[in-house]
Image 1 (cartoon, rainbow, N blue to C red):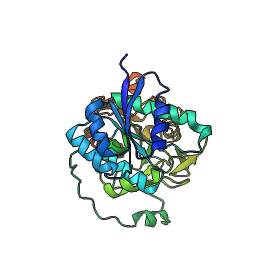
Image 2: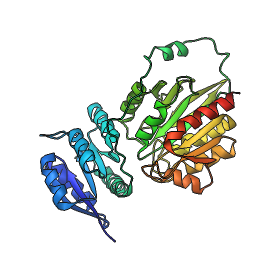
Image 3: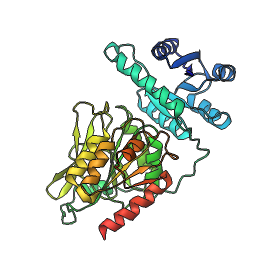
Image 4: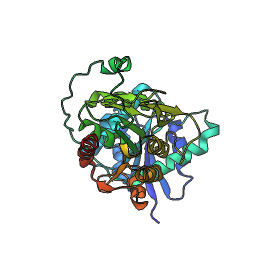
Length: 359
């Protein structure tokens, strides 16, 4: 079998050494070289013709975003970003995903002896997925004008009028993994501000979910939050699972609320899509819509099936528009999706189903 050729680009000699050692543990991967800066990397890409790059977010001489932008314009290829666990690192990482990077992983820590095996497994898995993923290049993506946001969330939270809260309110539940941050962005940008409440589990590390929610809030006509425990789910609002907790939907009298749970990972993930979908199945039933988007693995497939069996409308993103057709593909195999849609039709289907269910 042909090995996956990887080029590591990082200004830290120690990080280059660590990543090389981790990847060399897998017989299907060959680290063909490394580079300390983008200028060296350009020459090595020409010479070594790698299948996948790991790219440091912050480097001297040319930052990772500038290099990635040039790379995707001249020679699009799979890239896994290696990101610092900081607010700036998170913001730059999401810029990289917008430009076409497949996925990201946090930088290895010097004191993570207890988690080194998990980190190595995750790194190897992300490189293998990237090697087979669809590289999606966005050149100067057009941004829709977004209405100015007001403090509607604060007003609604403090309102004493609750007659409009019914247990028949529609809940939209979305699950995603690899490629999901961009897929979610495309969906949210196309939804109107009066869309029913949306709950989202995106596989994302702790420390990145806050930046992701903030970024989505600036791009969406809806109000986007990183979910907090017992937060009320309101129409026109989106609730994204924190990277450290499972997100569940629960009932509190005549309201839906978010519940956070720091229990063990499910399907190796916390947050887990299966956990979210099961909670929606049990508490919203036929008043819910379940959507599974691009991602590796099978997390969410069983939960989407439970949603379908409870009467919810369900659908999956199609293979052609997915960066990785793992999670949606598994849901389709399980018979958990009423229909399969390209990404650019997901928002329209949400709007249509929401209108039908409100009629």
